[in-house]
Length: 101
Image 1: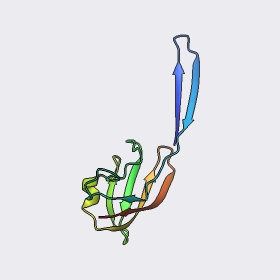
Image 2: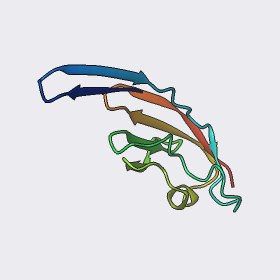
Image 3: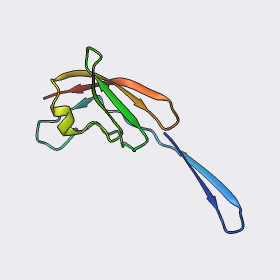
Image 4: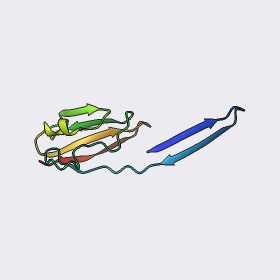
């Protein structure tokens, strides 16, 4: 994910800086094992990243901008789910996430 910042001083001078952040995409979540780790699929979620989770039949089981929470993931059966995360620049990251109970 790339972040850009443009700063303008009182004289109208602009300075631009950017930083590229590597996002680590988890491959498994454990929403019900009570250890407090790997409970959510958040990926450092920002409100401008849209996440959709699909079951093996292509049904949408989650769609939102705030990550797949422990409470939402716990409603699903154990197994592998497909996701599409649409980033702020419009590109999409696709992959799989396993729910392990």
